[in-house]
Image (cartoon, rainbow, N blue to C red):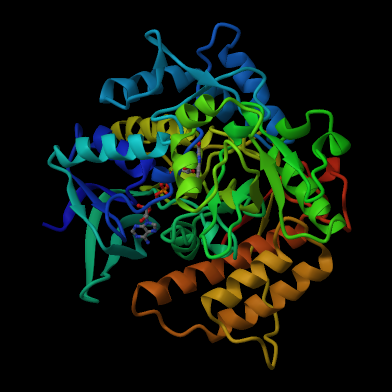
Length: 516
Ligand SMILES: Cc1cc2nc3c(=O)[nH]c(=O)nc-3n(C[C@H](O)[C@H](O)[C@H](O)COP(=O)(O)OP(=O)(O)OC[C@H]3O[C@@H](n4cnc5c(N)ncnc54)[C@H](O)[C@@H]3O)c2cc1C
């Protein structure tokens, strides 16, 4: 069979949760380009935010989320996120996700920029893994058809409406078409754009590139969150040291042992991620070092080993006892706030095409995501997508309260000679020129090289070449949006425009062939 009611691309939290709801309503196919559990979801450590503590409320969660988003959150979407959170979490609990408890009560921790403890976690710091394992076990017990090692390579649109998706079997190289009524992109973010990232190697911006090529709108893509504390050990791939370590009292010190965060901001280690990440970069420059240290040695060893068993074990296996030694860290690319623009029902501007999870831009994160809101966003908006498909689909309704500026990608004259195009060069370019600290000069340089590379891209034929094509397109979108935004806001920081500007309280939206 190659016709389904729902085709879902991706098998992280968003794809799996949608599948569980959609299978009650029709036939479901999941396409996923690796094995079912190759995704970012399984790496999530800190947890999932929900206002259930005694001093908390959806209103307070709403306020914290809006504040983190730095003027660009869609208030209506945030209201949905915070109001519908408890219901969705109850569903995850009922599905069997083993959230941690103490004396029968769910335990909540605090993370940066949350006013109160509100992060639920599972297995201490293995929340994502528990969610992924639980949901995939459930999905496998349903009649959902799952095709692993199948990469969605093109969205099929006829007369302006979705008809299906083309897919590459990554093992045999054969190409198939699958048809559907509803196509749901749950392909995650684009962390592999950058040299240093916490993201899984499947996270290559495919959904965003495919949607853009099909005519969908891409919004807020200049906003990339860099996580401040990623383990830096020679020969060890970047490994996240959860924000919750700072939430429990961990302190940042420079190579001279000085606790530097209070020099930058009153909230110190619990300031928003962009501020902590930039402060670390400044401090590393100041001390001529490529790292700072996270100090958890004053915390009780029992707290560390029970609350962060995964981090503790990982570091110990690499020769570092974090109960006694400082943890060398620096920032790395972590989370994409923007993506495929959707309304409050996950609909894109193309009838029948939906996006959910990190690949979507619902507007809940604005210019900066509040920690632990992304797993929540995935479940809240997955549920809405399926609810929407029960009612006849409509075209896109309005999205954000802030205005939007619409653009197509500019044509740039390719350079006569450019560095050779390969994944490491692309990732270094993005890290060096479009990373934590940006400027007109660095962005212009990157934009020209990227446009040159785009003009040289060969026709893709296998998974690495499709991914490279998608990454180059996403890199162009991120860079051109960052160039257009002549201010600093949230995670987007430019040395030539270090302040935010009311004129820029607007979304940048890209679409193919925008007529001005
Ligand atoms: C280290 C780490 C820690 C984190 N900690 C937290 C946390 O504590 N709390 C929180 O809220 N968030 C956290 N996040 C963010 C959160 O994990 C992600 O935003 C979320 O899991 C995204 O889920 P998703 O389903 O949208 O995408 P993913 O889980 O990334 O899944 C994407 C899926 O799409 C598939 N795919 C991609 N392209 C294609 C294609 N072309 N064809 C077929 N399949 C494709 C992939 O193979 C994968 O299965 C963390 C992220 C990382 C990396």
